[in-house]
Length: 294
Image (tube, rainbow, N blue to C red; front, side, top):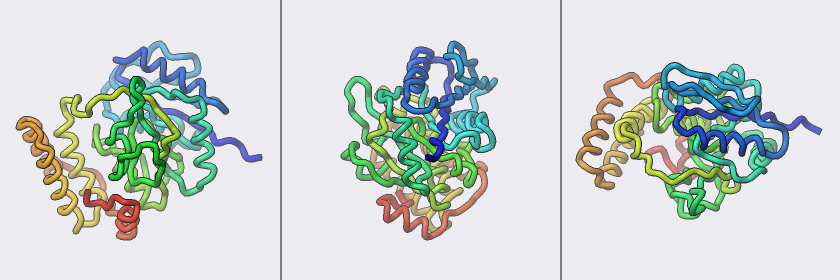
């Protein structure tokens, strides 16, 4: 018999949800199968009152979501090499089912080219999944599992071989679109991404615009995403489509001002290394239902 896949979990926290964090850690500890090793990263805040056996890393400054998660990855060894798969979970999330870890192991065992799994997110009170939490354009049925082109940042599992091959999350993004950047690099390297409705994370429903930096970061990182990853002819098409989509959503004047400020910043500031995807990856994204122009 083969050795079961070794799972680890990375959770970042700013120290402002201790009860939620403890409930999440308890739900991870209750998973069937071999224990999941957990690292909690305090992103600019010390981590306190965690169960015995949970490792912690305290960062003096908030490095943002990708920066904090990258620190958590390296806590498992270079590119997370001390485990086979890493779960990334929001600190106010909860795994309601005890078989999620085993489902993750089974999925990666069954498909050697599966690199990333995106979990289904549902509100714990209503059981409903928001459309934005289904990582595909045809999102009306959240109970349908499928191949996808991106994943949800706080509810996913990543094979550490992917991180070793294509690198981690882009630190400079700080917040927004860092998952798509990693997803595109993974797809370009030949890995697959699945959305799995049977792997569930409870998370309270709340709008992403609750973050003060939302509109600026979303726009800036959208430009960086294109500049880093898309073939040159697609960059203006992709960004032009997103300008039109943003205007069609009729944001407030202040939100629109912040969005265009971020859009301008995305062109004027360094975006990190440029590694445009292959044209066959563009075609692959298109066949999966999400061409990289939207």
